[in-house]
Image (tube, rainbow, N blue to C red; front, side, top):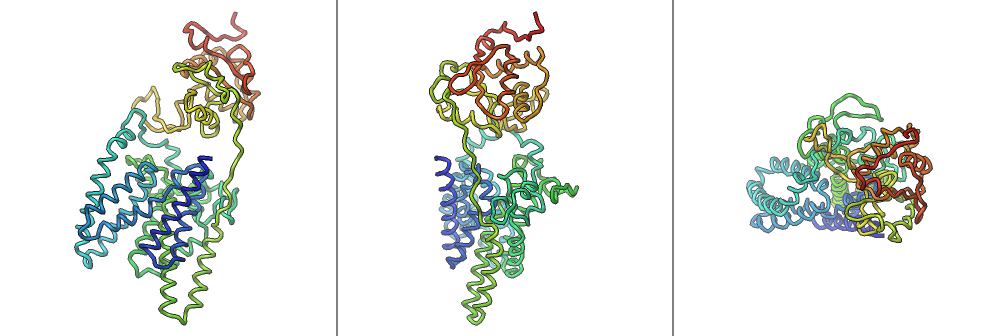
Length: 496
């Protein structure tokens, strides 16, 4: 319930923020503001991330960060405007740094280009803007100095994402394809062009792509529009990753990310998510385009009918196919009575943990929910988290992992759950299992009814040499006698 409320409010407040920012400061037409705000809120990338990343779709501060950054050029208010922007930046940093970083890059490019374009007509703007930016930057860095130090240099900090994640780029064909959560989308087609359903960041469809370029050509005499178009294209180019793929085929053509993906800080960004930042730019362009049409109707009443029909038709053809459908859901597996009744407390203390089969990760998160249900009191082995690599052969390697370091037993159980055959159980494998249990400080091993549970039960029983007990809706192996006794060993029937 908390997740659903959070998600609903995140999208709702984001839409409200975009509407008020657009209608009060960018366009005068309420319809234009509605069109832009709706797209910024319900763009395909927003809907795809709404399935599991509520912090990413909580973008209600983005329009105000954009607005307050542009207001830094107001004369005589450098300190006031700088402090307001600093407050917004600090707030957004604690919601999602990735969104803040992408917003900053786009704003930086936009402001730099506009400063060059406007330098003669508005000679004092650059100095005023720089003063306000200095205030905002100084205050923001001062407030965020400690949390950023912990994040980038703390005991569990990581330096760069795994290589396979840094290669996650948007397929060039995805820009003209409809996402699986759009009414015109096809899940089978979308799955071939995206890493997973949560990363359908570039699925804008043919209609919107054509309208995007049409708006730029139509309003090409406006520097703001052309610059916004350039920022969107820059985001798109960065999202393609180190190598450009077309319909799932590596073209061998390097993208600009091939130069950037090893740069510190940038090496922690997922390339395909740069396409997510295109949505706000397109939303603003849509609002400006609708406003231009409204202004044209007022200026030329005789052309009211054709202009209105043309604009409504173009916007409808671009946006109606992108209308989102219901998010996919799946029933949660019931929490075993072993957890809800508190029976786990007789096994777990400050020196012991619960080991689940398989260990929790992104494909099997149930044990994380069990621990959350106990207020994190039930200590469990494993997690789904970004953690630094702990390679004993290369201690300096702090590349991120999406789970704790691999162990033979966790790998074995994950392999079995995926449908792979059970390997031969030898005394060497039993020794590795005991070493893993001691590494995890295991008190009890828990197996709940699930896919291939019979195979995992048979394998663990063979490894440990004794049968589990059925308690509170789960199979339990009490392994404290093995873990706490340094002289204990595991042997098979072939050892006398």
